[in-house]
Length: 299
Ligand SMILES: NCc1[nH]cc(CCC(=O)O)c1CC(=O)O
Image 1 (cartoon, rainbow, N blue to C red):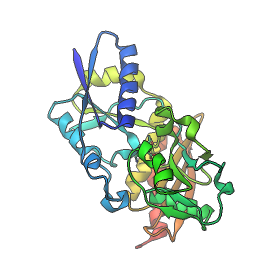
Image 2: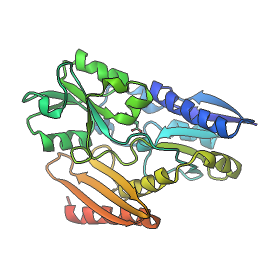
Image 3: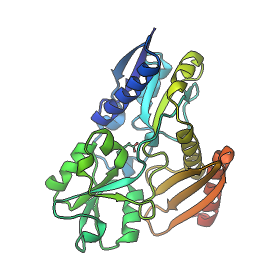
Image 4: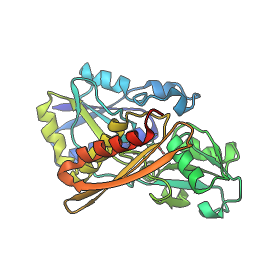
């Protein structure tokens, strides 16, 4: 048996895919895996700011089509890049152990953390979630929109004369660039994107055999966290044009969900926290979304 695994061609995507394939091989030594690279629309249009294209799904549609057509059997994505619902015929199989969910600051030489930055320092990020939370902490900062893969964004400190950039710890760590991190941003300052640091293994709905095989590398903890955080994302029905954050902490059989929601121009930013039993992770996310939407009314 040979399993075809689909991935985007970026360094991060391939590193993640190889990591998953290595784990699957460990548990299933008699099975062969082949990685197929698929180019997505998001890889082709590099010059438009992410919040203008808005829609999630930009990095996944071509891969999902390949899955539906049987050209590949598993697709590996960053869970945070996944739209809140999947096309008919596809589903998530397992969610492997989650990487660090936090955002980090990578700063120009000479600066050590957020508080050491001079007034009006220039920080690069294309994410409204990161932008408005940073401004909420330090309203003097100048936020510069940037895009590109992780290495390109780090380069932009030099090429665009920035004082720093914000990125996900998960991507940096997976690429072995940990020593570049200046500061881990605590959730109190920047709440991460729903399911940041988690990977998605997507398969055809009827592929029961593959589902059982993949289940061997699933993390129960990550599954519960992602369930709650993505339920919130689904409940608020938002895309990249508004700030949305969610992070779930599990404590025995209790789950605590921290959420963030704001309007398009960042004038209003609301944080809400609520807890429940882990068996009600999804309801918890949906309930918080409802509470938040009520607070925003018709806005
Ligand atoms: N939006 C792009 C993207 N998708 C996943 C990651 C990093 C890995 C992860 O969060 O799982 C990144 C880069 C970043 O936000 O810094």
